[in-house]
Length: 274
Length: 301
Image (cartoon, rainbow over all chains, first blue to last red):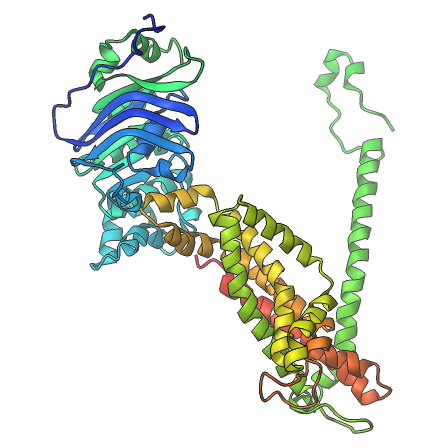
């Protein structure tokens, strides 16, 4: 492709088959003067797992973190475009980012339990939202769903930090789902975990999609093939002198991995560059 | 003595490697010598500490653990050749003034530390305030007394309140810097988790940053309290002294440190003994606060 004077490459829009919960239309994302991501349209479908893959620096985490306005915590961050969540633009002036994050939960790359008991970790969001019902019941339910209940049911008063890395990450997932958010964003949730813990978290994701809409950033292409229903491939464009990420191709995971439309996608998934 | 030189041996010497301890080998000698040196240094450093504690217990303990302990702890200071008496007003005075100082400096210091450590760590105001706090930690304590003397005592006279304010001036920088450090050490990923749950900035600070940093904050507060309880110079200009129990905050007030200063210079056996007792009581008060703070600040899980 000659990208000199002509228009920059823009991925063909992906037509989602089902209900779209979050319709993310990135026009431009800046950090200060640095253009981090451009022209990417990523619809997130209801009760499906949408995987974001691509090489380092391609902006997949940046796009994910734009979906619940986590990037607003970085003062130089600037978003141009729209993120339609059930028809409302979460970047509209009247929208409170704090409230957005209560609907759209997040699981981070590094397990980050609070320095409090296992129970209090899971109950944190419930108390934050002044949940009136039976907190113990909800904590148990969340820990069961996160496949952690059996391991911790006798030591709920122990510190969340006393658990192993894989358990901590499942605790963080339990904490995120205890408040029953609508959407769960997962930013490389397995990158700090060993293969066994990774497998457990992946099985968990597949169970979670019965109830939740999940968006998942992963460095691990096998993981995308194992869990994602839809996959978005991002790449980084260094031709303009910068390092700008953009969406190359989005489609059903099978199609992306077995019959990619774009040459770049094909090269990436076959491991020709990373 | 044989120096080990692997390169000098033919390859097959590895079949019978020399693995035993070589006590006289130069590196082993050097290591042993340096280990011994650090050991001696540690003992030397401990000598003054143990001497002070021994002296306090031996000299102050006779009255404190004697038969007239109740009188010593609650009685009024004796005059000239009087026998008996106690240090009651000084204990109460010290507790009251350290209490006033803590009531002023702890909330103020922690709130300031939140601004410096969490809200706006790199702003000009924060950098300036942090620099000034560091300068103030090395501030001669007598100047705090002179300052409060000039601002308060000249207008309203000597009082427990003025003494408490002088101690608060001394405590504030320690509290601010320790609390800031404790809160800055709360990992960013924990704060991210809280923001990700939909916490406002205030909720992140109250529910995550402060509880997580609490042990560090309390350590700083205890350091400040211990320092303030032992101060005498600033109280000389502000609270002065009194032979009676404090009845209101606006009157001259006794303190342990001034009592120690006054009595230890007197030519009377009884007063000198009480000065020793007061020193031991002061150390025990600080120790008690330290233990309490550790119990309160210990992570709950």
